[in-house]
Image 1 (cartoon, helix red, strand yellow):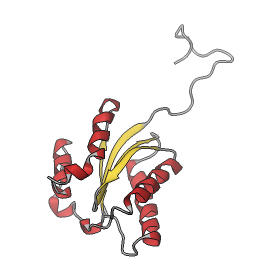
Image 2 (image 1 turned 60 degrees about the vertical axis):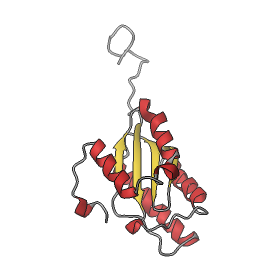
Image 3 (image 1 turned 90 degrees about the vertical axis):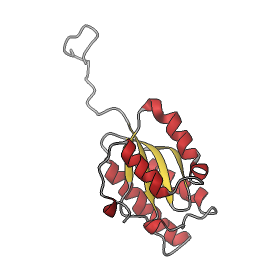
Image 4 (image 1 turned 180 degrees about the vertical axis):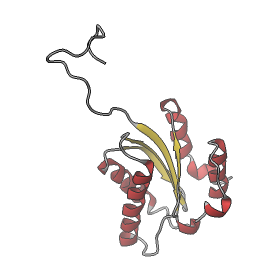
Length: 163
């Protein structure tokens, strides 16, 4: 960086001293035991709450959707944030909220899936997430999740991915 002539910054000029950018992530996580706990009447409030959590940590939720047993989130986060920390905050806060408002036996699975997304893929990922109900008329959550792992070349041991 520097001025337009490629010289070092002179007096009055400053380099950018902060990190810039965003990271796009597709997050997928299920209810504990994939129990059908995300009832249709809960979904709009739950998805809005999940988006609010992302906003509170200075990220952006581009789309959130899911079915009775799992959620997909496409989010933009700051480079200083880790996917693990984002998911931990989202799951801890939302499960507490659901237990207080809807169901005392609500819990998320221990693990999650996280997949990086390029800016050029955002429209396709948003469409995929928006069509979750239709998609799961043909494919179970387990089939979908295994397909994501394979497509993204993620090594796994099936004994440990379902809680």
